[in-house]
Length: 289
Image 1 (spheres, rainbow, N blue to C red):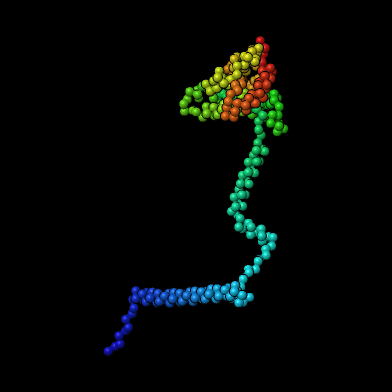
Image 2 (image 1 turned 135 degrees about the vertical axis):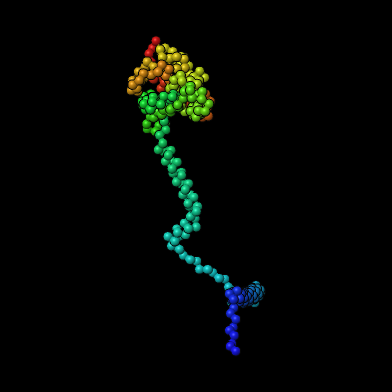
């Protein structure tokens, strides 16, 4: 009778045996580690016990020095200057990064303040005539810069013209409030008091409530009509090299001094600079009756 072959183990049985072997090895390693920890603990407790006994003997004067208790002094490492710098940067890199960021921002703001040109006077051009604004704003600025001094003492005389697109049609349109809001914001400040405008923008400005009655100061001039000094018929268009004649309703006026977001005193300062400029303008272009 032939010998029977030994029964082969299934993959499941082989895997189970391997798992059991691994578990036994882990158990032995854990027991060994636990035994080593216990031995360390016992040795440490024994060391503390001996140090305590030696300390008592030292305090009682039985012995003058101990080989068990000794002060371990860590040798102080010496660093070079470059190593000290590197070490400082390494431990403070986050704070230095944050500080550097704010230094850059502060530098940019300072540069912006230093390099920004601050106007000595501002004129509001309130009109819906984009072509007039594009062609004449620079000429208006140059003309009025002749009437004032370097107010802010920055070495140059600068007059800015702020264009405010405005017309009766836009004022009646409830959906178009951007221009009105922009003009309203300017009227809440005291930085600009001279106004060049026309009748189409009166719904925005309301000259009767916001502008000075020029009849009190310049009533001897033909062009003066209450709050307005009319520009049609003057040489103003020729000075600006404006090829087309001015409309009959275009005028220049000056705002009344009132309390604003800046303060009434601030607006008064701007008015005191702008009124003499307006007076020179009227004397140059006006015609006496």
